[in-house]
Image (cartoon, rainbow, N blue to C red; front, side, top):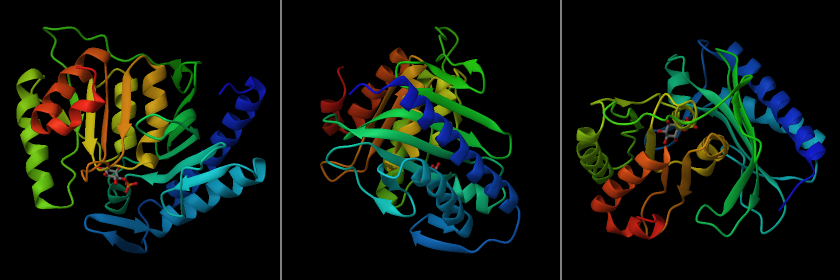
Length: 279
Ligand code: IPD
């Protein structure tokens, strides 16, 4: 659906302000004693995640009371119709809790869609509290880091790509699958795998052209939504395939050409993934 540009501008302003409120809280809480609880295997949450999410919705709901939500801490779902927010108040919670200074706030405005993801992001904002950087994008209007327009890498061989992936796993068989894929991708790349500890920032690294591809299994819509739009608007491939066929979700973003190479590797490890990729 097409939206009025004044409306989208007001949405972006509100999202920027909400991200700013959350960044301020996270910056203040960073390095302080936290209340940490476990949500499941290798999955923690802190009181700062809850406080940041509350601040974000205090702003967004005051400005746009009729828009629905899907958020990491307070839940929600993709509505049948109508706009909704997809919010991760603190992506990189484990980093944050260990005082490893790489984490961000991610907010997207999305609409339900009949694609694999089930939604389409329309506006995205990703902000990093400690550096003050802000990525943003409105569908069809490009992607920006602060005032700079973003373009995915145009690295061509023989300068080999840099790729980002996570060895994130919750069960042992998942680790084996991650290692198999990395083993097959490594010979194609500059022999380096980068990893920030924030899926959102890994995705944004592709939009900046500083990484050529990122994939990860098992992340959620709130980790990916804003970043997907930012990468697409920077000219890249960006898709999120939620859980199906009883396997974990998959996110793949990259330059159009290198994402295809990694897709081939993914399909060779799990042929069920073939239906997602036009190989
Ligand atoms: C996590 C981070 C991490 C990724 C995990 C996510 P959270 O999100 O994005 O990089 O590997 O899969 O769950 O819990 O910090 O919002």
